[in-house]
Image 1 (cartoon, each protein chain N blue to C red):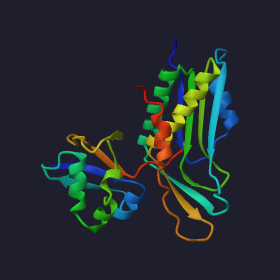
Image 2: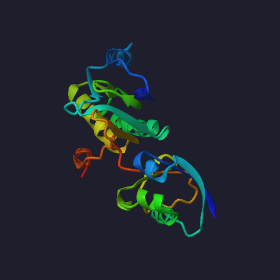
Image 3: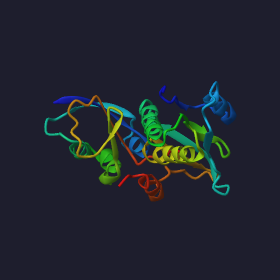
Image 4: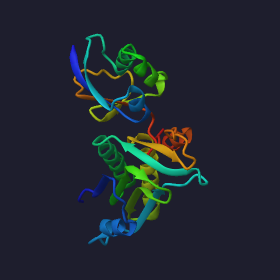
Length: 86
Length: 156
């Protein structure tokens, strides 16, 4: 088990219903993609947030990463939609 | 040569474009070209009453810093400023400011363009619309055209 802080933004935050949370992750959650699968199994709000999993962007310790990135050692993992600033 | 100063700010308050240009050029006689881009909140033909800008504190600053440092290195910029606002803003309000300074205009134009193309696609900000008809606004969708604009900077 490892403990990680998750932060959510925009409609990912709205669908899950909270801006952040701390979770214990099972050892078989190795990559960002594994994390998304794990979260989707936690309930309908997560399934709604990550319904179109391929559009979800991720950052580990405030740097962009791909879904195949290992999450070992991550303090903070952010999950959010494509960005629309500027 | 001293490293080019890069000034990054993520703030709720408005900014003054003239003040920012003057600050970037102060006490310097080596700059030959300053290109400024500002992005504003538009009203979408009267349909939009306000925009709400959400951001990821910490990463927003870090990502804009990375983008500006890339631009400094790639185009030989002498200085760069990037300011992005968050919170609620009404049509006509400033949202973002990018200033790029270089010895000659082409590098300054390219630098400002590059910073904006990457800022739109990789700086963690999200816009939500509020509509004048009172209906529930929605989050603005990312545009493929913005990805295409970023991708044209890829070096083959």
